[in-house]
Amino acid sequence: MAVAAALWLWVHAWILPGFAAAAAGGTPLAEWTLGGFDQEHARALAASLGEEGRAAYEGIHRSSGLLAPLFVGLAWLLFVALNTASRARRWTRSAVVLAFAGVSLAGNSAIDAALADPGDGAAVTTASLLVLARWVLLVLLLAVTALTAAEGLRRRASARVAGGDRAGDAPLSRPRGQEPGARTGR
Image 1 (cartoon, one colour):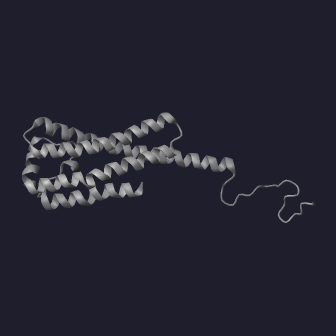
Image 2 (image 1 turned 90 degrees about the vertical axis):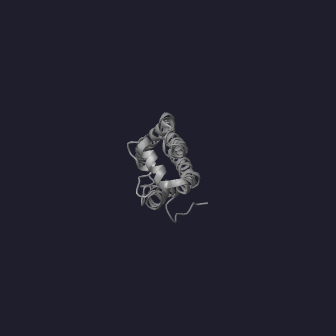
Image 3 (image 1 turned 90 degrees about the horizontal axis):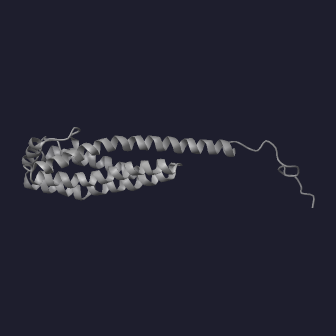
């Protein structure tokens, strides 16, 4: 899970900002527009990227931008499966994880299509809505992570208390003849 989170952060906190500074001339990339973007922003971004920059941007989406959501999805699905007791909660949380991964992947393709033809209002609107949905799902994914971690910790703590498996615990009494060093008598 840590590797998947690190990959996602590497893409979104290192690769994309560096690419934006170098290729986009300071125009914010579509992924970083919290409230979505319009055709004017798509035109400005496409113009500042140019053909080479747009091809490089698509390359990011097809490499690390493809792997990061897949790894996050797989790692978080495993995390949810291992730490959620209730089947209904497990399915609900898994749906959020799958939606995040799916919307991230679809959003990358939609952004590429919108920048290929920024005059296509439907493509720009679709990409903008998917970017907005990605941000909402990221917040939900963080909430799922916190809830799942809390549930897993609570379950482990109650299992330790019930089983007497706390550090330093030893049985208070042993059956007769089973004291350390006692002879069995046979």
